[in-house]
Length: 308
Image 1 (cartoon, one colour):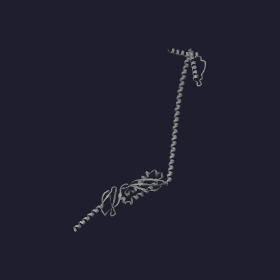
Image 2 (cartoon, helix red, strand yellow):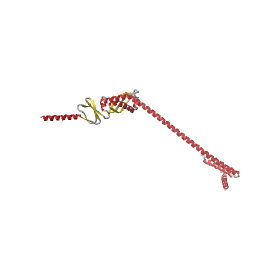
Image 3 (cartoon, one colour):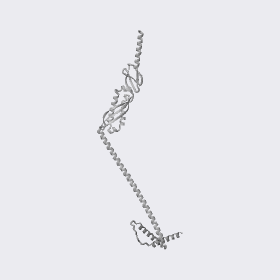
Image 4 (tube, one colour):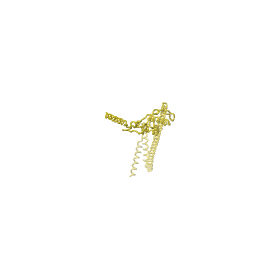
């Protein structure tokens, strides 16, 4: 009986030891950390993996996620610098860097970050005009990130990103902005159209000017050529007249017959090529024409003899 009692005590102690050992073993998942308190005072932080605590003395007080978290910022109405009321919402990305600070430096961490973000959104965006608010969203995000990161640093939290999701002006203000934008676009279109017409007129005037210059240069060249031709013709006629005069002075009357025959033939040519030409019946002194041609032949013979 005594032996059975001893074995019962031993088995009981072994069971208690196993239970205490199991109670002291704490397995922490990846991406999480646990804070441990001993008699109500923080002692250490359990990291991912297998950890041991003293049962009944140590207690896991907070189980915190060390992964990046996303928090939606509720919509709120903001009055801008130019007294326009807009509705704004956003999103915050943050990560706990120090589990002990996040657990003991602030109560209700998520609620504190949310309220801090909403307050700073009102502060930052309320100091801007509506146009600046709509056009400088990246600047607003960067400014909010810097302010929130500095404010949450004592809590062991790192603010990674702050994004303003939506900025909604009132309907009447949206209509007014649409009309203003349409007026600006119509103004730019009218300016571009006027500039295009002006450029086209300038190019057309330049083209006409260039054409007029080329035409004037052509007329000038043509007149020069005509004058040169008339000059050469006059020189030829003068030379011919001089030669005929010398021939007449030398006693050769056939030269005079040459001029008469030339003018006679030219007159007949003008009659034949006239626009109102008719069939003309007129007596022709054939012997005179033949004599003139004979005179031309005699002149040619004398010229050839003198050349020999």
